[in-house]
Image (cartoon, rainbow, N blue to C red; front, side, top):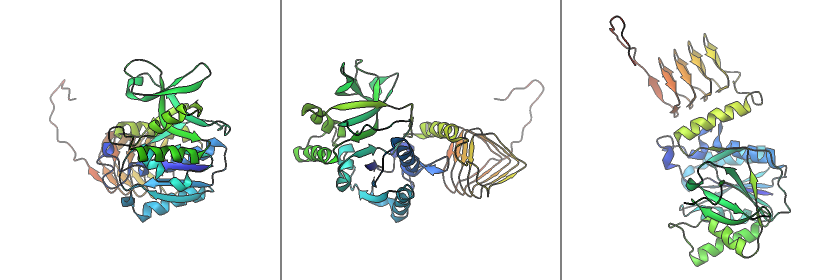
Length: 335
């Protein structure tokens, strides 16, 4: 089996955190989002993975490319870098990894994580993973027939047709056939809002007899904006607590309290502080005299005299709160 990971652009909805770092490379409990995604796919699909193709913008740079290939190699697969010069939609992105679109193919977009235990039935033509949602009007959904097969893809339905939202994780038995369908969109210039979409390719595949089935995940974790990423960090810490080493042996915890689950990275120094729960502190960061909960503090930052909650701080940030001078009379309340 081959895996294809479209990584899109830097991620405008995550600015300012994606001004210098692409969204899929932002850390969640010590590992980039895309690395956790690939590890979870390989751990749960029970299939031998031969090649992992990462589709990136050329601007990501050689350091990122080398890191991605290293992730693949550590998982026993060949890493391959493919470029999407211009963001022209999901179908166009996948087609950029055309040489990898052969045989059994697993595709997952790199702005999402999921909790699931599944074994892919490679005898099926195609599988689309979904999760039930309360408000289907905000998602693309699948409609099932009586046999449990997908009979339609509906984008943001105004009236209820299904509550099974497509999460951006797919399996195709015949990667070469998918490649032909994606190329068909380009050749016929079939666009939706100026972009080539995989849903249009799948619609045509349904019409010519390809059978699509649905798989459901236990939990779908979005990393589309700051709040969603902070929540995803919280859930990953809870899921990995007791399964991964989350506090690096080189971290210095001085007169401080760590309320688990937390990730404390390499060479982190924490003094006179209370950290947690649900905090990730990346390598080389120094925290002094602070209280931090439910937050992500990226590498080589300094936090002092601070009370932080539900926050994200980038790399090489210096955040120092000045002590307050107060004069409050009897029975006062300051909020």
